[in-house]
Each structure stands twice: as structure tokens, then as C-alpha cells.
Image 1 (cartoon, rainbow over the protein chains, first blue to last red):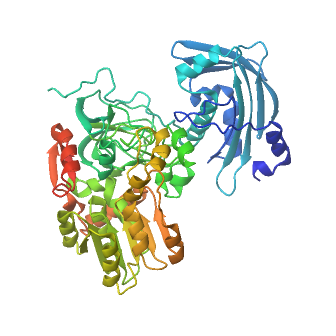
Image 2 (spheres, rainbow over the protein chains, first blue to last red; image 1 turned 90 degrees about the vertical axis):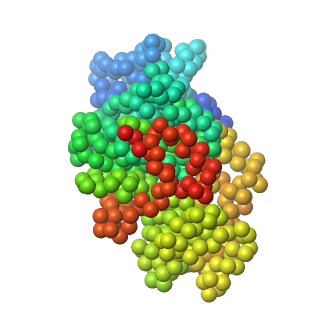
Image 3 (cartoon, rainbow over the protein chains, first blue to last red; image 1 turned 180 degrees about the vertical axis):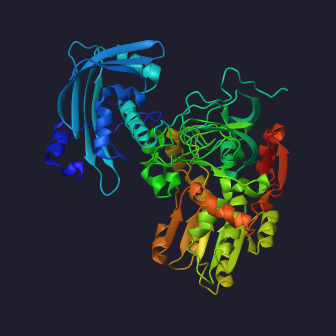
Length: 197
Length: 390
């Protein structure tokens, strides 16, 4: 059954008031919203996707710029983001979950980063695997650190949510993350403008 | 290593860049033996494709020898001689499993850009802009091939590079375009554009059982090459006269299917500007999709218009009412190269076709930058350029 047909999921999604902005895209990124709602279809069974995600120590395998996630208790975890030489940390707590189906989390009030989100795992039609839906909020009070993260990583939080969901799919389906990071080009500092023998 | 890099509009430079290395566990590193310059590389050269960055290594028609593999590579071995498809596919997602390789969900690390522009992101491609993934191309001494088991075809020993190189793009592209025509016995296929892809369309249409193929172009040398493949030719000057001529040659019915192997060059220098600029440049745009408009006008009732030519944005003055009125079928899209490479290799091995007939220029990579200019400026003499790397 598709997630949208499940009454409890449907009401959860709509209750969270999807905020959609019509502002135009800039440089291929969203730049306009702290809340994001995306879903992706992943070619593995729901229990595989859920089990992988529920072990938060797996998340740095695909999440951009996440350096580590330490699970500190059954409900709590400690997150570290590192972008070049900038580091941000916060603690998050699971506020509700249904095993195999849904996880909802929120950062602790003492954190410098305010984030909350819910992820749903539901069977996709036919042999398509799992629909993973993500509702995600990411705010940093004061705005300065937000600005800095966006500036350094080049990604606003909504674009980051999109990118990370795609990377989750890619990792679950292929065991790799498609990347060009670190590839050779004429922009490399060792590159020379014309070839000399 | 030597590499041809995009430097800006009409600027391709030979550079000395670092060797590629394995970045993900499914990668392979390939020592390139031959690479071709594609007509679509000229869109990059002319500055029409958005999200290119100075220093990007060009090239998406490549073959060579595997020199290194990542730990996730299962089928490919060091020493294998392979042809590399132009599109990059993961081989594992739903679309890849359905043989729709150019619709791969996973290969494009910049999927967010086409997702927003097109509603969905297709497969990445080598050397073809950051919107298409930003992967370094194969006009270089070495290339990194991601998801290498999927993006490779092993070539048996003893066959010339030139015979199999075009399995990377133009042969599968021409073949898929002809296959999309759903050719039946007695059919006539009209092909707009007798460039390298058009030439492959002509050969493929005959292989698939077309009775007649009519090639349309305005370069005499390209039409001569088409005639050698058995096509009738029309050197087109005037649009109205062309439709009349095609009707007269097909008993008033029109060709059973029409292939647009010309395409539309994307406009603008940044992807955000594409939409605005295209809409602002209405006159230019209507000129640019002329081949497609003529194909729609010429095609028989209930016929098929097949489009291997590259389209990137919005076409104005698209004669949708004519297409509707005649009940046409449209088939199009980037080639599912990985689906076609093996069966088409078998056609080559069985001597049914030798795609090297399109090659007019063979040069060393050191002269590659000049070759872009030659290919761009002398379309009459220069049909297909093959670069030798070593």
C-alpha cells in the first residue's frame, strides 16, 4: 500500500503544513525555504531501507558534510557537521517512531542548531521497492551560522535535503555515491595551460 | 596527461592535467586509445550548452584499455579493451533494470539542476556540462569510468578501434532512432541531417528493413556519403519545395517515418538564463527547430517522427495541430547506449556494417584543439574526426 493511502501517514504529512515557495530557482538551488518535503522511490524493500536508516551511525555514509553521528542512548544522538575547517554540533532526540515505517526527530533545546524532521518508509507499487518521504526543518538561530554553512558548503538546507535523499537512494541501490569530487580537470592547480613534453 | 579542455566559447585548449584516479569503488581507470569529436561537442564549442566550466575535459566517444579497477567492479578486468558509452548509468536503479539507461536515477551528482528544470533528472554523460553531471570526458590520455561494469563493452581482440569506437554514441544513437521508426516492409524513411548520426540512421534503417531512405542536407559531400549507403538524396534549399518533393517521391503519401538528426542547439550561457533567452529569441528558436517542423509537415498520416537530434529547452512555433491532425507518433530521447552496444557489436562482427565509413579526419590529440575548429568551420569536408591518444 502506498504511504499516501495510509490514513495516519496522510494526516501526518498534511498536519505538518507543507510550506511551498513559488520564488524562482537561483543557481539551481532553492535558497528560499527552511522546510522541505521530498520523496524518492528506492529499489530495496522497506525493512532494508528502514533498518539502514535507523542505525544513525550509517548516515554519514551518504549524507553530505556529516562527519559523524554518535548514538548516545536509545533515543538520543550527537551530530557533527564539518565543512572545510568549520564545525557545527548538535544533539537530536527521536520524538516518535513506528518501527519499519516512520521516525520523527527534533534537536534538543540546548543545541545551537534547530532541526526537526520525519522520515517515512512505505512499500512502493509493484516491484519498485520503497517510497521514502522526508519532511525536514533546519534552522540556526541568529542566522549567522546558517549563512556560514550555506556559504561554505554552497547548499541551503532545502537543497541539501534533496541532495541527501538522492544520495541515500544511490547508496542503497548501488553501494556507492555518484561523485565527481576530486576528479582531474584543467582547473587543477597542477594543470598547465598548454602541453609541454 | 594530455587532455582537451573547454576554455570558453570557441576555445578548446590542449592541457597537461593530473592523471584521473579512482574516486568511488565501482570506478575503473581507462587508458584511452581512441576518442571522437561528436557533433554535440560543437554545441559545447559554440558555447550553447549551459553549466560548462573553463577547464572541463571534453569528449564522450571513447575507448581504451582498463588499467585499474575499484573493489566493487565485478565483471571488468585490468587489461580489458572496452568501448565506453557516452551516457553514464548505475545499472541498478529501476530505469536501468528496464534498459532505459539514459533515464538512470543515480548517476548524476548534480541531479538537482535538471530535476528543477525538466521535472526529472536523466542520466549523466561524460564531458557534457555540470548539469549533466560534470564528469571529465575522454578526449584525454586517461579517463575515469564510474559504475564501470555497466558503462563498458568489452571488445574482442583483433578488431580495429575505428570499427567499434562509434558503439560509444553515434551508431547506437542512429540505430535507436531507426528502431523508433517501427519500420515495416516497403517503408520509406526520410532523414534530416546527413551528419554522422544521420549516416548511422540511414544504415540502420536499411538494416531494419526499410525499402527506401531519403537523406536531406545541404552539404554535398554528406549527401554523397549517404548515397554510398544506398539513400536517395535531396539537397534542400527551400522548405515548401522540399515538402512537395518528398510527397512527389512517395506517391503523395509522405515518408512513413521521419528522423530529425539535426536537433536544436540550446541557448544561453547559464542554465537559469536558458528559459528567458529562448523565449526572448523567438525568431532564432523557430529557425532552429526547422528540421523538426518540416519532418512533422512531411510525415504521412499516422506515421512516426523519431528525434535523435539534441533538444534542450523550449521550441516555439511547434506545429502541434499538424501533428495532431495527422495522428503522428513521436519517439525521442537520449540513447540507451548500454542496451544497444552488445547487439550492435555483433552486427559489426558479422560484417553487416562497418561504422568507420563516416571518418574523414584522423589526428593526434596534440592537434585536437585545431580539429574542433576544422570540424566546426568546414562541415562540407569534415564529417567525423577521430583522435588518437598515444
